[in-house]
Structures are given as structure tokens and as C-alpha cells.
Image: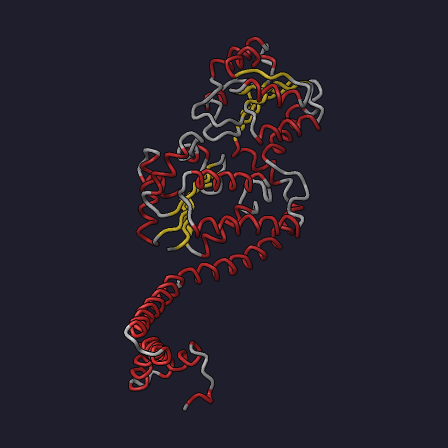
Length: 420
């Protein structure tokens, strides 16, 4: 089997495509089991910036089957998905997995959140028993490489993230945030980071809206804010100057009508919105409203670019470390390919040993002396274990296959003095 990755990300596909092929947490268990019918091992990584299927599988046939499965699961033609896909196999797939874990393939270079997301993806696959020896080993290797990169380079020295970029963009719109009210939709890791950055920039007021009111209130309390449930969103929307949303909802949470009503109450004071979610939380049509500045994750590129310069030298160092770790993993993987041969050889010698032992035991039971039984065991075992190798070497000698004979000398640890 070989390592295989099929996916789309922020570099190959716009958000309109990424949201079509994303997997919600609720759908993930079923999807993992369905993909398991196509490939022996798989895990699915689905974030706002990427959807990737990691697999240990048989090469070309599995590639085509996996692409077809991904398209059919999301009810879209494979031809529509194909232009946005990347497919990696063997060392290229291992390199990609390690780069993802290290944050080298992220929208924000070196961001640490992806490592946690990859660990969550592995846990979900493990819970459904869709991973095995090869993918588990690959993920552990990716995690240890990411740790090595973080401790031995300065790639994570400066706080740069999608959350940081969203708040930076808000500062460009409003200059100072002390008099603004921010409405955060969701209560996950990204929204937590947004809250921290807003608090650092002295935001006037924070409202957190979430499906779980308890989670919303707990997060809001950290910043002296207010937590509300999603049904109360429309009532609090007119207060919000800044709206930043990141949920796992499969359908939009905020529609054009609700925003229009909020703008009337606000007397058309501008509203700044960042929709970090994939699929999107805010209806696309909201962008057409006057006095609304709506940005998606794809719009954050320019803001993020300004904050990356200090990480690029560290990233070059990290790339070298990744290549070294790819070599290490591929050495292990090649060894696994030959383990079946080794196991088969050991099983065969064990079968021979048992058969000869049984015959020697029968000799003892039939009255032969221990010395005769041992002589029989030693002589027969030596002959049987060396028979196939001796025949192969005779054949190689007759055919002038000197390379096989040299390999035999290495395999059987024979020195040049053993020419007999």
C-alpha cells in the first residue's frame, strides 16, 4: 500500500468550492465509514481553508475511486471538482502531511491551530476505526515534526492568524475600537482568538452568540461581555459595529433581511463583517447592501501578507527539517513493504522446525535413543532450512548470476574465506 492524499485548499479552490466539499462534524462518522469502503485506511481533515482525505491505499485505482467518492458524497460531478483538486502519493504525500502539520501550507504561515485540527481529525478516524498502522504512524511522525519545527525555529514567534487578520482589518475600518461593539458568532477556537485580539485592542463591548448559551456566556465573561443564544441574534444585531462569524453551521446564520432591518435601526451607520466560516455563515447577498463591509477568509490574504515577513526565514529552515523527516518516514514505509516477506519467511521456517521436531519426538517414542533423535533433528533441520537457498545458488552459478551470489554472501554473512 502507499500513502495518498486527495484534497482542495485555499490555494487551489475559492470558498464557493471549498464550502461544497466540506464535512460537518455531524456528517464525519458516516463519511469516514463510507470512504473506508473505498480505501483500507482513511482520515478526513476539514477546516475553513481545506478539505483533505488522507489514505493508505493501493495506488492508481484508489486515486480514481477516492476522487469519484468525494465528488459523489457531495453530490457534484467529478469533472466539476477535478480542476481544484491536488493529489499526492508516497513521498509527496508524506511531505504534504508534514507541511500541513507544521503550518507551512496554511493561509497564515506557521499558524498552530492546524496541528490541533489534524489531531482532532485523527481522533475522529480512530474512534471510527478507519485508520491503521500506516496512517497512525504518519500522523505521529507529522506531530513530532511539527513539535521539532516549533521548538527549533522561530516560525511561531509572532502572533499571526486569521483571527488576528480579521481584527487588523476592523482597525483599518474604524481606526480605534474603544467605542465599537463587536458581535462574535460561534464559540470555537477561532472566535476565542478573535476575542483575545479584540480585548488587546480595547474593544468597547463584546457580545458572543452561540447555539449553546452556556458556552457563549462563558466565553463572553472572559472579556466582560454578554453571551446570547442564536435565536436572539437579530435583536442584538443593530448594536454591532463589528460582526465576526465562525461556526460549523451547514447553512447561513445571518441573512440579508436581518441585516437590512439592523441597518435601518442603526440609521445606516456602517457595519463591518468578517465571515470566517466554510460553509459561509453570512449570506452572499449581504455584501450588496450599502453601509456593509463584508469580507470572507479569502479577502484576508492581503492583511495576512503584511504580517508574514518575519516567518519566512524560519519557514525555509523548517522546509529543510521536513525533507529530512520525509526521508526518515519513507525508510520506515519501505521496511513495512518488506515485512510480509520477512513474516512469510519466519512462518515457513517455523513450520519446518515444528515438522522436524514432531518427527524427532516420534523417534523417541518409538524407542530411539536421545542421541539418534538429536542427530536426526539437527541433520534434517539443517538440510530443510538450507535446501531452497542452496538450489537457488546452484542455479545462479550455472547461469552466471554473480549478483545473486554476492547478495547471498551478504544475506548469509559469508566471508571470502568461506569459499570452501
